[in-house]
Length: 214
Image 1 (spheres, rainbow, N blue to C red):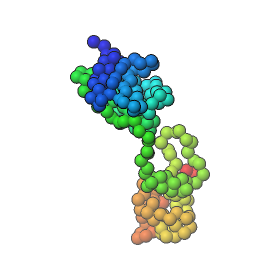
Image 2 (spheres, rainbow, N blue to C red):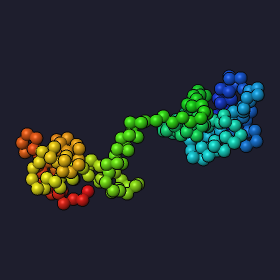
Image 3 (cartoon, one colour):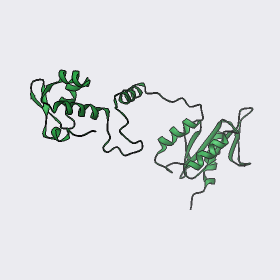
């Protein structure tokens, strides 16, 4: 038997009734409305899949109440975690219903969104922004061939080494690349080779890239 949005109603109603709400379906334009005493009403929109249209509907319902939930069948989409994050950002609740037995799960409740901050990530991006010379990458492009500050620093070292081997300390002073020795030692691009202790020169690949502008 084909699934219908109304198949979600009975499990959602039982959940709300268990919390002391009086529940009614199809009140005006609302799929589900629940009232408990003098509290703001709870509104639930039922859909067979999580979609942008459903999110729009939920946001519209927030003009009526802060307690708005979206309810979809469990497993309707595999990206539940991202859907939860979206709902939390918008102050919406999200419910999933297992239609085979009516088992219901509240993935998040409506509440003001308080984003989790990652100061270390922000600081790392600010450092990359400051180190990146010019604006070498078109926004929205693919990651392939991306010019990073690290690559730009490595190319500066390649240009300096075109005149012959240097120590990391000498290159740091000449180029302003503070991590010169580490970049050459790590040699991610295969452009450098160790000539002797503390002294680095260009590999064959490095000599080929010496004319590159990044």
